[in-house]
Length: 286
Image 1: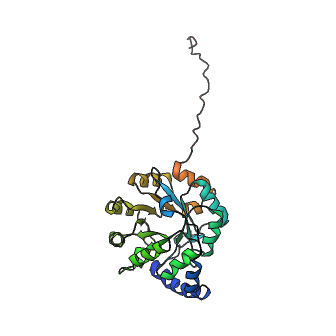
Image 2: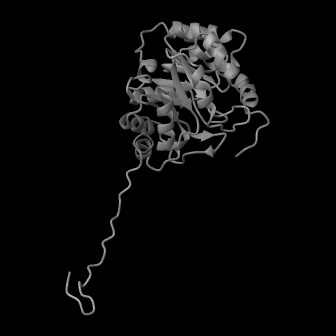
Image 3: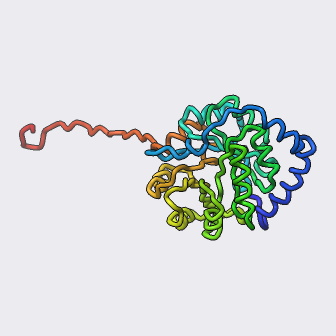
């Protein structure tokens, strides 16, 4: 794994440069005009908060800065189709290019093959990125509370609402959580990964969920790999799990999805005891 002095700071710095380049090809005014055309709306919020079940947001990403290369036979359309057939409630797509090998075009491509709502997962801190997300086919966006301080989060939530984009607001600390709630976040993502150090703390959700009002939707993120993890979050009564690396690394994606949700089907092998002769020295058969 590559070492980063501060991953979040580094990726945001690179993202500033990437946005400048993107604006040259897709000026904001041009995007706004195109967004006036009728579009099919897909209910991300409703799909990940279906009652009576722990919903799954299945993520598509080719690489990860914490684990680097994830999947050799990367076929975006096939993966999107597998996620839908497996029973996912929504699809998350990493569009950040340098660290996750993502592409904004993946949103449109996946939208053609899948009927599921699509979450754009990226480092969003400019209003332009919301217009861009909608234009390329996202139904929802990830907003990191820490990147939108000083009241900017509420501004982004308001703009996203006008664009009919749901927002998954990600937090990693109590301070971020209180800020997100105060700003009006309706969907809270509890990320077990610290984006500065990339370290995992599996107690993050346990420590923060008690501060979240019951009328909010809660999504657990990062390091969800097993049925045991699934049961843990089911007990915590979160609404959805965002699962990426575990699925992307699996040889059989659909089976791994099922194993996480339902548990592995282990066949019990019963050993047959050899039949006894039934005779003892000087005795009668049993």
